[in-house]
Length: 168
Figure 1 (cartoon, rainbow, N blue to C red):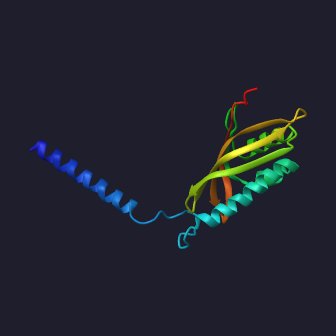
Figure 2: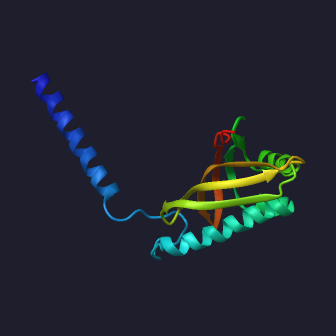
């Protein structure tokens, strides 16, 4: 009798989990942006993010820290190579100021992968940056996660990694 009640309990629990999963997984995901009734257009979003990337790189070249700051979500994180993660707007601002002090003379990004939904999109690609008095050129790859916040796309996560130097 005890075995039967455990078995019945286990069966009921499994059935409840299946019902919960079927309910949660049915239908398209609903974005928390308040635009659930609108369909998501990945190609149009890709163009918007390309424009944002242009603003981001241009702002780095011109030293426009205010524009860069405005492009991050309030809880954004950045993962630069060779150092600890940078979390939150005040820390990102300080990091950006120091980064720009390196004297950037070139900064380009080229998107190679793009996917997502109405709430988050991922833009991955390659970059080239030239900086400093010696005009050091660094090549690498990046991964940006953009979040749709109050009608605007904001950088939620920014990560890049330098490629090894070319052999001499």
